[in-house]
Amino acid sequence: MLTNPTLDQMQALGLTGMATAYRDLTEQDTAKELSLDEWLGLMLDRETAMRADKRLKNRLTAAKLRFPEACIEDIDFASRRGLDRRNTMALAQGEWLKAHENLILTGQTGTGKSWLACAFGRQAARLDQSVLYVRMPRLLEDLALARLDGRFARLMDKLVRVNLLILDDWGTHSLSDQQRFYLFEIVEERYRRKSTLITAQVPVAKWHELIGDPTVADAILDRITHNAHRISLEGESMRKQKEPPHLTDNETSENNPA
Image 1 (cartoon, rainbow, N blue to C red):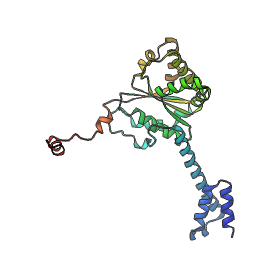
Image 2: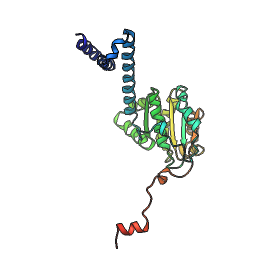
Image 3: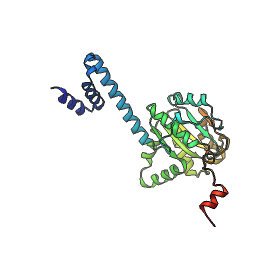
Image 4: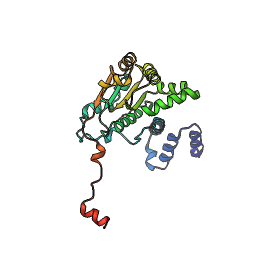
């Protein structure tokens, strides 16, 4: 008789997982053999799991990852990209996030930098860290517009507070004075407080000249690189490797008769 009122109370309190577990247990004959502590333990386990799933889903939605399905388990270590399995899996444990360290991924276009960055982003969300993915060219445009329409402080606060900020496509072009200022503000506020993941086609050794102003470049790079883990991807574009085979001359003739 207490089944419905109990479920209603759980739902009213937002204990959806416990309510689901309670309903499932009442439908199982073997549940009668469980003690009250075992019932409560199973219900709490379900509630905890459902809340963790919901929290992860919300974090991934907020992250806006370019490749939302990318995950550590699907990393291709077979391709010759210079990607070390042991180092990668060690980073997946997330100690660098707890220590507020950075991660830099470099390599030619098509070597999988953005996908790998998103895989690390998803892993960070699994570790209950807030994540935000942005492309550098788009970010610089958004910051310029935000300064004009009054959103600048709010946008900067968002960039500074997130536990892991992923800056994709770093160094695609040289920076203006205003863009250098934006970048310095971001890295200065995040330094030793949060972690930043950067992907770039350009080697770290060439970042100084891309930033431009020597003094500002020194300040920015010192805050980014000194406590950064680095992964340098090598080899040809993976996009080329995954292209479908070209039609043979015979197939071409059959599909396109003269």
